[in-house]
Image (tube, rainbow, N blue to C red; front, top):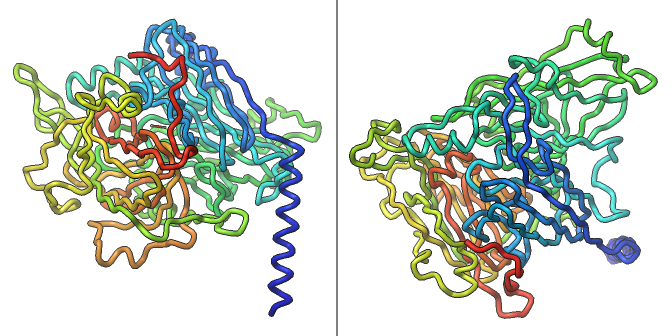
Length: 577
Ligand code: C2O
């Protein structure tokens, strides 16, 4: 017995030394990027329109860094709209000033101004993405963030032959700023997008788009790492490649226990790395890949499908398009639009690696418990106006019946300078003020309150948060995203959460660790996180229209006692409101 223990210790020491060496040889580096935000005419579906872009690219350019690197991005605003950029999923340890949500951590970058985002990638590797975080500008301003492991540190899965970002989005023929402006004015739902896209391309099932179809060329027998990002505004998406099985290896820049699936489900704000093993098919064999929405409730969607082409290369590595044109191509099978059973089964397959190299540091004990209802509701129509929301009201959305009102100045600035008066209040309720049957027939007194309220956490508080969908306007899945932290998804279920019975089934051993989780339609999800990052952290539904309607709140995490537990002062170029 003693000998076995000794061997284990010795091997642990050896691998530790190896890592240290690799580290010493390859110190983290600083990577500089410049984002010029400017208009660019782009044509899709035979419609040419000016869109807001990063450096004239749609989707935007990639950010590539290794774990441990510092990333510095100078953003220069050449358009008339206000802009901010959010580095979705980056932990931003003590660098909350670089997080990016408008009026939460910064005032927007005004036309003609610039701001330099400066952050370090700590303890993360995988795929994330960046996007504009003001109004609906993220519709066109978004791109992949690729975080490679430290040099010399392998992936915990076979090394892929190639890595390919696969980014889902939505295209509107009209100006998206006008779409949301109109929706907020009338109180009704916004116009749905005109297509879903893969890497900015609608695919040939849409009008006028045969040239605008994403093609992935593969060599037989090789393994490809697809870095999948859902940057769509308003829809969860199913994705599948005909005749191929995908192996999921990472979610939200955290490795997971690999599992195989024919169909992937990904919510807005989530990222997933999958391995695609190319089969021994002959040259020019082609298959379709396809994505279309998963929708519950009143979703803003249409039932169209975006497709891309998987094509096997010829021996010379060249594809023969003449040959391809004559071949039949196979369409993958996707679940029904409202397949909530698939959604529940699929999300329960995600597990942390939870091994010695990649432990799952799940908070075992809980200092503070929160119970939040999330869902849609309505607010009264202003006098002398007709509204197009439910029963002549305006659509609204809330957490614990509080619909978040964006302040006129950034919360983080107010917090840092201890000047919350008139900007926000500290009384975000830790549970609904009036409990009701959340997933049953709603009572009449569910009118939302508008307010800018935050929940305050002492440094290093261990938090358990249960998020409960409501059926006030019909049950609906909501992808909740937390800024500044990863959390562990310790439990989920349908119906109303039962605080007595449900915790017994929580997984505290290998729950998935992520930054965006779907609150199941007509159900609940329980997460845990450690509030080890001082600052003001936004939490919201990543369905953009729900965010516009107020389905969000903010956490204030206070400084800790030690010098390295305090939020740093703001950068000198932090934009002013
Ligand atoms: Cu990707 Cu606050 O969002």
